Length: 335
Image: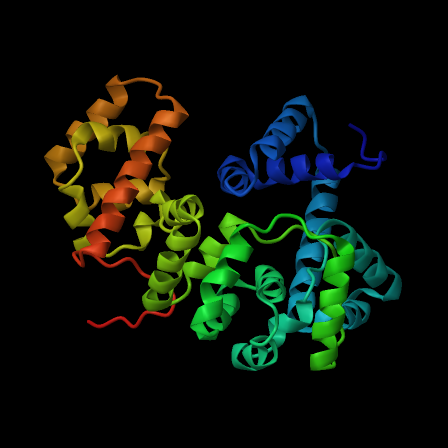
């Protein structure tokens, strides 16, 4: 691959992963879907040589885009362009902003991200649940959680359901909703037409609300759509979240799980999760589980995920019984 050739976006991503090294690249892969991972893996495998100049160029481009994205989050596109012009010159600033909006995109309702949740609530609480759901799906989970928790109770579950079942929304609809909401705040907004909503979106929001709000919404959802409520509940606490638990809670649920299940579940666990688990076990038990992991050989991903989900179900059961506490947004911690 010659440094004089213009690299495609996929090639740049591959060069970036190669430059960052295997450990950091593995962490990035956790946030990609299977198709993206397969494409990048193939790209990396077919890449025979990367020159120092190409590595430097890709790193500089990546840094510039991250910097511009941070500026946009702080003050919008105009603010980012102004800062970049002062630092890099007008032409360079325009180039970076253009590449950013074309690839990473500026999310809809960006103006609302800078609005206090209470003020946002005042303007939106009388809107249709679908409108509220669309806006909250594009905001940060913490901000959306605060708004959702303070909505009238008759709207909370309805909005949560609409976020969970939301898929793609047409650009025309987003544009019209933005126009109406923007007019209320008399703010400038940069538009894009990305996908928002879905199960992951409402799970992130519910993970950030207080338990009382979560409990009410989940109970209402169970009455309205039992399958949807079960799917959301299954994702409310994931196996990797074990690292957020205190040692006493970890020690409590460890007693409920047999060694074979631990051996399978930990086969696909991160080093952080393993450290959290092994750090709360006896030395003898750790040795037994590690021996089981070594001698069982390769394990199907499906079996690993099933074992991890069984452990998560036990954790949630113990939490519901008040025996352990999982850290959640909106909770007050009493020592």
